[in-house]
Image (cartoon, rainbow, N blue to C red; front, side, top):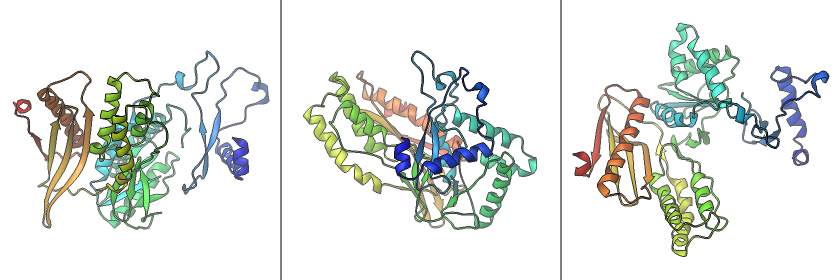
Length: 384
């Protein structure tokens, strides 16, 4: 590892990071009298990210490393709540503003690090003077680990919010930097091109969102490879739900055959999966508008449906504006039917169940009290 970094002339840069941490008292040298004492040594390795505007190289710690028959550091720590579940809610609120804002330190590699950082930020915002309530309340619902994702209504508010947010977070020694937006401004570092946003891709010029696809078509088509490819598609809003459902159905068919993880799948399943894999490149063209306009005429519309192999739900928002009716997809979710055979009416009920949970989550995230909810199903059995 060190040889590879040295070959790329990055070893000195990697050492500079630790020197900076030492100057900031983030780390300290172990006293010579304690070097031979029993303790836990935290392995680390460098991660290079040339696109980063701040740190091209940063240490990532392997807190899962362990001695034989001994627990690792991660084994001894409380992981805390699953913060990934917050991503859809944060993105939903982010989409309510015509001007989106995003900015891009913690010990990476330790399982409790995200929760520790989140708890520190919450404590800072909860105990800040009341005169900053408008900013602190917005920040409370905008942070995912060290990323702030929110929005404003106009340029004047953009400058005011960023200025106050920097002042608020500076009290806790947090440096908000690298602000990105779909509208240029005084504090905006980037307002054009495509940038990463909580695992999605945000096109700043078109103001659209799409999934960041990371896939590879190599290797034998087995249960392991099919599962690995499906899990490489991170889709917190369910934008690609209709297309990502097929490989999950095929995977279930493979389970019924009781094949081993690395056994080749039957030719009929391989043929279908190969066609899906070859067409996955078209997923990169699927995007949705980021901005969702809401007024007193807005309505949430929930649609649920089911078939023999799967069931799903999706939530749209319908808004009547002076320029006409606007309909935007908010979220979608799909599930493979259980292995145990179920009747279509029961699957329709299961679709209604996940649909009710989905629309309730969206309603709570948007926090618009008078927003009307209309649910749709073509199953009379489920409705009655």
